[in-house]
Picture 1 (cartoon, helix red, strand yellow):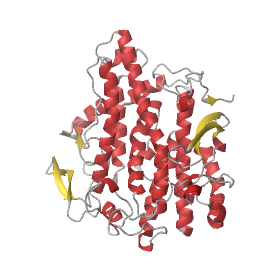
Picture 2 (tube, rainbow, N blue to C red):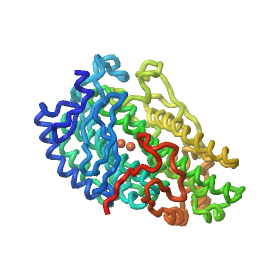
Picture 3 (spheres, protein in one colour):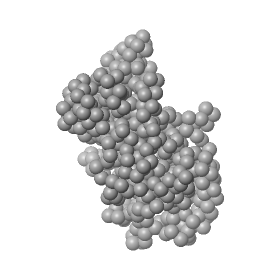
Picture 4 (cartoon, rainbow, N blue to C red):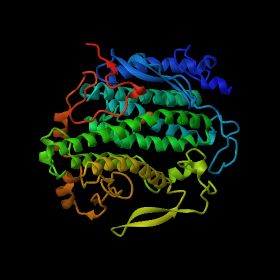
Length: 483
Ligand SMILES: [Fe+2]
Ligand SMILES: [Fe+2]
């Protein structure tokens, strides 16, 4: 069994390691869904380049020691498959009221609605980001970056397949209906938008794309980690394999921002600029100034914080009690895994002041996951700030305070500065453009977004990567563009 699951069956139309060949009903449902997916990909997937050969990785195994193969593929021919991480023998539910009981292989009736909802929400984010990024191929700063964009896109497509498989296999007719709805909603659509705010925002340029893959894909990472703990074993195994792919998405974001910061610092040094906040002077060099990078960071980080939901949430408590959604690294935490008597500090608005208040740990699970997320975000900032300080500049990128620019949770009705000082509406209106990308910031960045498609060349606002994908040399043709 364990040997079988490592290998992916490519003989069926839908590659899989879940023995679809013998699961006729689910195979039929998935084959019925497939044409609609391909239509969606053509309508809402990458704009252009569908006939180009792209150097992509495809999963051929779920063995963590070697699971991907790289080769040239036309995106519509990508083999989107259903891949679950190997079953852990005798796995037990690691938290909640069912702590220690055998993990479920079928959906427990009492938690059916809750599980379906969580799977649909996760599933909805996957195609949404593809829709948000669909126009970016046309302004890619290099073939290397274009390839990374398309890799992220096809894998988000596969993540949609992963959630649709769960819906179709375990949720009968309403699962099939939800699967169809996932292809019907559209990012940013007035009538049927995607389910979560950040997934209806625009990704107007490549700096936004890097910020998105760094900050918003990382929210995805945290959600997948907590679902990977689930007592519903098929969900756990699905999410565990998705995390393997997700790491590359955040790599694209982290190194992308590093390369932008690097290029800016190099250009400032070469031009003898001492003050990195002299925006006009820096922009005249055709690179993105650090204060604008900070504004983009402020925007994408706070949109991503909103994805964690309200700090205090009975839904989160219920999902934990039920054994459906655990904590980040649940099995490594030393406690009762039931949170019967523990508390967790939550930042709240109390009498007009931001205060730390102890809440029952059970209802504060969103806050806890968000704190784990913030800690995870810090790593990139350290790296980017290292680039800046190594270049000799006294400037630090920083994460804004969690009260800043929020649309969900405790601070949604107040304004705060990035430092976390509460301010009135007038001050906010006056300062907003100092803290978040303004129209003119966006116009400036847009003016730099000129495509570079010569092999081994890079747009002047971004440094080349240190190493190629799959260890390819600098002059590797990552995308063979058909003209
Ligand atoms: Fe994903
Ligand atoms: Fe992702």
